[in-house]
Image (cartoon, rainbow, N blue to C red; front, side, top):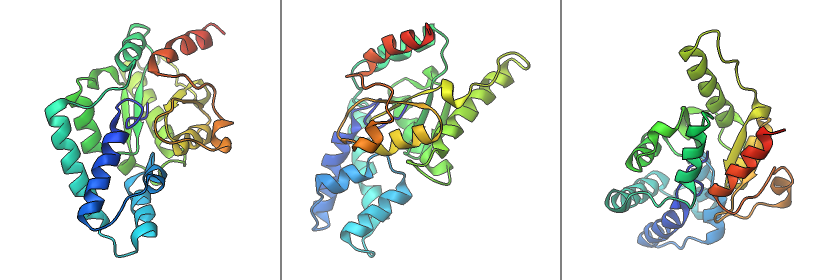
Length: 226
């Protein structure tokens, strides 16, 4: 699972907050610049911002201010969940299908958000953007998540479960960078549209494009029957 824009409807919230913070610095944030940052880790996001607003743009202050405003809103109302999220997670838990989060967000903020939503227990493993050398569209974060799933299962039942292979994994993504990274990892990308519209290069790699997370359930059932 990606997190922002896939599990939680945070991209729209984030866009509005970024526009507000950009305005506080006397700048205007375009949708094009924002969508270029979707699915990217903080290092790549800083590069995109500085390409847009200059090498002296105070990225750290901008991102810190935006995170503070977003957390205040989510502390009050909780993270806005995407349709079908709990239904899909419930299905995976019932079927004992392991699930992992692979998000470009940092560990602290991502775990806080998932915990605030009460969803931590649904996931076997987590991989975060500040834990890998290269962010999406590189495959690093997806391979890290798979490694942690396998470690969790093999440690729980030594000599029991065999390790999962990349080609046995479905990756749910809403960003072009995530789709490219999942494919580069040898996994099956599934695209669920949020704000970003992938180019043909990324869409050509997609296994399916459900309208929402609940529609992933019959997709998994169909694959398991093959």
